[in-house]
Image 1 (cartoon, rainbow, N blue to C red):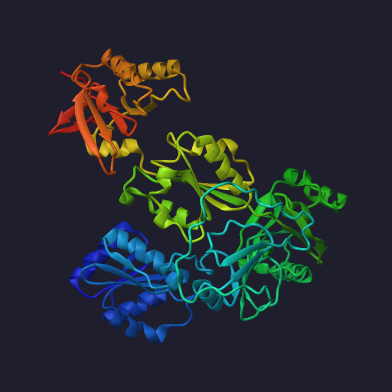
Image 2: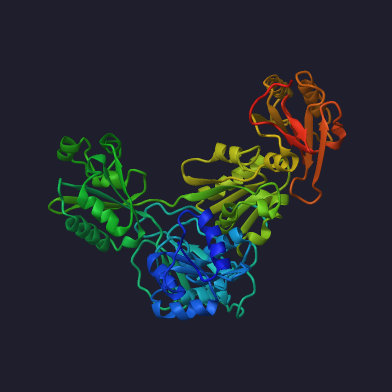
Length: 593
């Protein structure tokens, strides 16, 4: 990333970015204009601490294509605004403006139409896109009826209600997908009113269309084609095969089957070919990885055209077909050969996506940017109603929301996994970190290898409470839940005793409720048997949320009646002190004198 500044104030802000981003460099030249041109030519992204008009005049002669031009963000001298000037969503300028704004406390200014109203850009999904992108995007924004016709259910972001989704299995697929199971939930988030009202869809071929397919289809001025990563090309070869031969064979095989090379997910082969230059060059030319497998793995794959000659040579009766089918799927192109190479092509079924999102303790500024990105990437969001209320404004129009109440953790986990298994992009949300007394564990108990799982860490209630109390977690500590709804009290009591005997700082979750009003007192008695009565104990209620309260006491003075289910209790170790009203556990373990 190139940084350009004209004044001392601008350079100061640029140095702040450079300190946070190791990949950012301040570009200097004889003049600011020369520095800006050099940054344009030498970097994929540019942040200019200059006037917008000056940047426009300098860069205008250099503009070529929005798909290849660098992203440009302009920041004013006072760092009040970060303007996404060039590159928009396709070039990453909108996201860069948000990142610059977060670091400099500047307001991101985004004027791209789809981003401004919360709709996903068709060219921002990470897939190759062909056809009338601008025209179809405009139709979506104007509320006109648009048909999205896909070969299968892919984990796409939410789309507004004027986009009608149809699943039409590709003719070559002998196993069409079953219908998606219906789960109860709230209505999808409505799209904002933008442009003209929607007209009735007459269903004619002249309507606006989005096709999601790996097949070669004719293009027109009203159609966009998204190329999903669905095709795996298995490749075998003799040693020293020329790259031109492999590339030509693959190109012909795809063309004869009516398949688009833009949907190639990877090339695959036996691990003996991992260093084969011709195969590697072909993968590089298509911008996809080369996956290789041991011969024994490929020998276990059932293929239609095994060869004992191949088995004798490499230890598996098939390379091309077996490698293409190594992860399952449908064989679309049986092995076809040239003088020194073989190619086979399989279609791999889509994989749903489940993001396990921790929202943090409640405050928006303690929510991870990655959590926000996953919420906006999802088409289905599942969670406890009160947590979903925190993030509704972040969800894209058309997002389907599945909310439930307290005590329905298993049902939420099953619903999220079922939606992901049906091919959707799902976000399962919870407070704090998804993996700490939250939804990650129950969800992963039901998830299988049909879906991709992404974990998004969040700030836990314990960490938020610790920051408010001071530094009680400066040495070894343990998280304990006092709720006996899922764990017998006898087990909890043994763990409390172990923490007390081990002199660990203890963070007590679920400490006390109306129906569980004695467990906290019992736990404090256990700690008191192993620690001095003046050991600090902190109680934080609603950390970072409205009604936040911080209370500092000791093992001898804490009144359990002050504690409820919205509280975290932090019991210090024998070394924890109160210094200037703050709870501190020294990093070095020193015995009391």
